[in-house]
Image 1 (tube, rainbow, N blue to C red):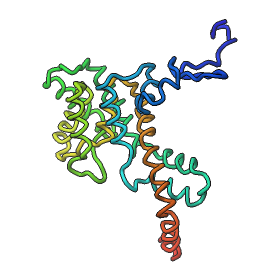
Image 2 (tube, helix red, strand yellow; image 1 turned 120 degrees about the vertical axis):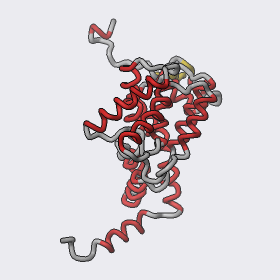
Image 3 (cartoon, rainbow, N blue to C red; image 1 turned 90 degrees about the horizontal axis):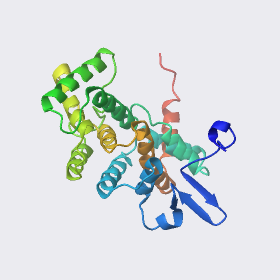
Length: 265
């Protein structure tokens, strides 16, 4: 019976289990255990194949680059949720992940989508003429600014000059022969923005990560999912630290103290 008949539609190609076996993407899970890394498993589950060695190295680097960035709003949300519900670790992790938007983590996917749309529309590839790439970048930046939109992948609230993750990702991409059209376009977009706006915004780590994911051929609409996967590790670490060195109660107490006076205005 087929799915078209409406009689066999509850199916998945990701994984399945029987009384004595578990398979993931057609692989016996027990054979994967101890032989593949968790990031490689994530790649397998999304793409249906295991990554090559260079793909694995670069994909792992992207996940590492996104795992933590200090006491960000998502971390504070997770810690404060843990203050209110210390018995529900999963709720605190979820609270932190819900903040993956246009300012934090979200630029990974926003940048990947933006660059990919330009690359496809212009027919760019890794060997495209630099002058042609610059012309495309100028046009793309001009269109974003004219529409009143933020140019994805540029600027960072802490790293005003250089995001230290960016040159490392570019170097690794070159070493892995994956310095493709998305990464090349992104650095050209930064130059175009400076020419048009008269000020320099650095490429940020989340944007570079999105460009890498696109150059690896991963679905751009999944880029935020990979960022969330990476940041989950950071949130779990912060929540482990919260149990030993709690910040949440002090943050709450400070907010209560500041809010005790007369209302503004």
